[in-house]
Length: 110
Length: 112
Image (tube, rainbow over the protein chains, first blue to last red):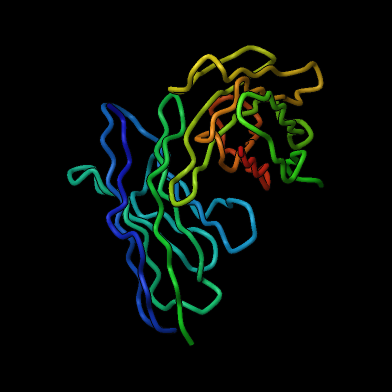
């Protein structure tokens, strides 16, 4: 069955620390991959997406993700987090429908 | 430009009642999808509609139904509400069925 799993449920960092959030997917065939962010009190927003081509994808606000087909992974990274990055982050995969992971809550302290 | 809008913002119902949630897509978007987000979980796919036809259905009981109107707005209906239906219901629209989805703010449904 198609699924997306996020290993980190809750991550706490200090400002300027580096971030990596794990995401693994189980799909056969071609899959589109996404990272969405949900800031407190706001709706889901797209951070970045991978359809094909360069496996290193750059998104908004300095985020990037790398698609590693051999590892079925699409981890999200940011070299230096800010307090304003505090939010819930969702990885999602799509073939015929969009399937989300359970989310990672990121808290960044000044 | 307005984003995806949903109404109502919040709703409180009792078990056994029926509820209708509404969604207006971004202007020009022809596809609307519905998701259920239970607290502490990621959104779960319920339905996708494209050009007024159901294009996909998630693993939800027949109590859940939806439709899309000629102006591409959509309604999600849930009959015989259960306590477990309490959740944030999200609507997302996209230009075509397989394009990037833009999410609305959601409707918070509480079933007592």
